[in-house]
Length: 390
Image (cartoon, rainbow, N blue to C red):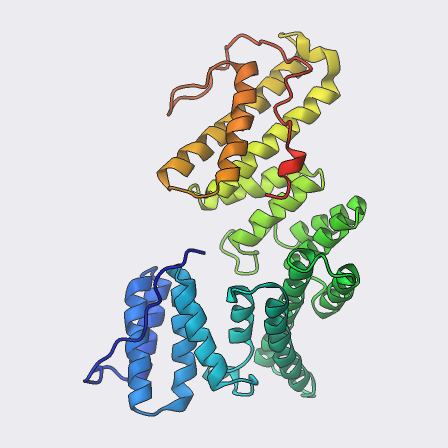
């Protein structure tokens, strides 16, 4: 997330004409219509107003809204500042969520804190503590209406995701700790008990199993995760968000489930054809599929007229098309992941040794190009394994 200069609340000697409720609604409307800068202005005016009116219950919603808008604008410093102010106003998360209290600010701080590691874990744990208390209160109600049931399920999902967030920290920043693996096992077990049908929890379970060199268990978890949403309509809110599905594609590739990964990546490309990472993963995944076909087909690929050779050639062309588009997007969008660019260029260079020069930009590969065959030393995916942690 890009860091820019924090945007502080504007100083004003006069009160906004709108009421706090109107300003809040205006900010939300701008968020929903993808106008974050206008939303920020309304939310900043809201914060000024509620502070001058000394309306304490309205400060938290304003701070939370400003934090989320700042994230949308890519301003992590400002978001961190707003959420920290929210923490100071409600340090125990005891104020009801309906008026801006609850766990959300702690969970955001877990992701935004610059220290990472143990500091992130501490924030996640503060948020989890609040969620557990709220879940307990809801579960204690003997006869819950539909609204209460929905709220309970929502909080269980947030708790499970918070536990998975701690797992991710122990698998990365704190992986060196002696009890990291056991902590991950305990946390993912708890998350599965809290929300066993969550695609995100199942993804985290798969990640843990892959780290434990248990690929069959990982594949089973990934298959269950995908099954929860793959047949849903694109606008269904229960479908995992875009970044979560990008992570899913990486896990599927790591688990040797390339066909399933391509299904996910093709769907992502339809949703956002400007995603450099999704495009890169699609090209890499197709290259991995081509590598498997090369091994599977054996000597048949050296006969240019064989169906196997044609299938392999088509897969390589498709991979190169995705990868060339990755490089185009990288340049146009001024993307900043140098390792991704380097790996993409390595893959394309190796493919060109087989397919010949790439087509001019905007043109498709000519399917009538002469098949040049693949030498045993012409392995386009050399180094793919070492890139798996990108």
